[in-house]
Image (cartoon, rainbow, N blue to C red; front, side, top):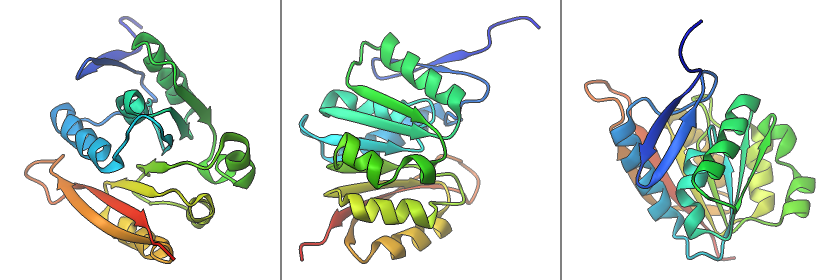
Length: 195
């Protein structure tokens, strides 16, 4: 076997190490547009605790970290979490924490009680969307804003309906990540209903 076991991608002034088991958007130019929409929707001021669910190599977490107090990323793939930590380190970002494990097992009431209730949750789940346990924990966490990035509008719509008990959709922005196909990434901003 020859060559490196990783590549580097550049976005704004950030470098991202991506290994063979790590998820990274294939269309890097449009990924930048997607992450800008997510960051804009998050409305960060520098004071927020942000949870980045399904963080992959920590791309979104590191992309928004300079506008947040602390970003906590959770991802299933341990190798991706190792890359996420490296990505924070090589970019001089000290306000991120990353955890590896199944989302429904890691993100629970004890995790929130230990790390604090997030002001904002950014979630970018796989095509299957979010497990009911994850949605229940998000509702328990009660962040002011949720930014939901999805590559599957059908499962996103299902999850939005489940979140509708406490959240209302404020903005929707599709991003054409896959030109000449019917597929899009879709970003939705939800805000907690005032009761």
